[in-house]
Length: 67
Image (tube, rainbow, N blue to C red):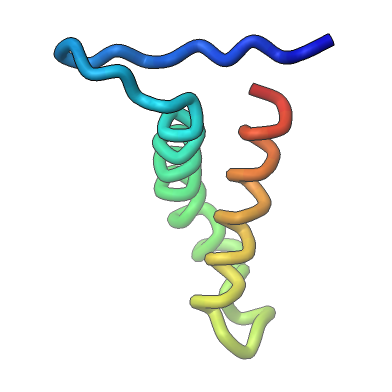
């Protein structure tokens, strides 16, 4: 069965479904950042920027897969 992709319409402009996944991912990562800093997530990795980017990619792919 083929999944149904619903476009988002903002001001008469149709946006691709992937834009909603990007938006949800940005909001989720921004909400998780303070929590992750408190538990010391960035100290576990040599490069904290790469670790946060990997987390972003993981969350984005989960939203894309299950949305």
